[in-house]
Length: 333
Image: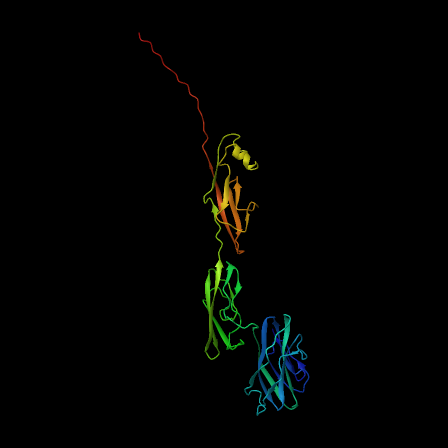
């Protein structure tokens, strides 16, 4: 989340990734701002080089970019390089593992100590590592179920023994890449459109395969179906036979208009349902043609929807036409 540094007693700015420090100067430290959580064990690591005897680095974590926080283990002694040249290789040093009692924003601090006023120390490549307190049983994490369209984070961000602490020295590769926001992340976000098993390969910087694991993201798709599939209303063209949609259903049935309304119902059981008419429940009675939709949520909390068109057919009216029969009589002569 950004660095600050103290160089010759001055203050750096966020974005500084290294610090050239003189041990006797005030504020001789480099600090990295980060979010720490409970349930994890952390360790500060950096590349250090020093010129001058008797130097050491003190690691701590603090709520401010300064010294005086909680110590992360004992001070680490630094061996002096032979030449006054900051470009020479340094040594990888690390703090002891530590935890926090409360989640929040902290500063991981590395402070230069020593009694060599004419010397200097250079700190580069500061890294904060973490692992779960209860160990790391899985790289990919447990299988998980999501609703279609939802996103879930996979991966645990840790490595099992004998690699107790994960760091930037490890490379991650997730296969397949479909649905992942970053297939090279230790903990990518997954939004698959169908149930997918992701496999992760973890390699060290030298190409050694150190771990492989897989996790299945099950996608729950809610298929909602309205019955009947091709509904229609049939109004009888008989005056007074259809009281209308405002009349109670019992009155319609009493008048024998069985096709003046139709019942739309869901094929299956759902936790909650909401029809476009505002009604809830597994079925509704419909008295007018048109489009009707429903949103249904299953026991897993996933939602689906469906729509159906209620058609209209009018039965031909029965017309009775009277007619007269004329008889023609003839008389024989």
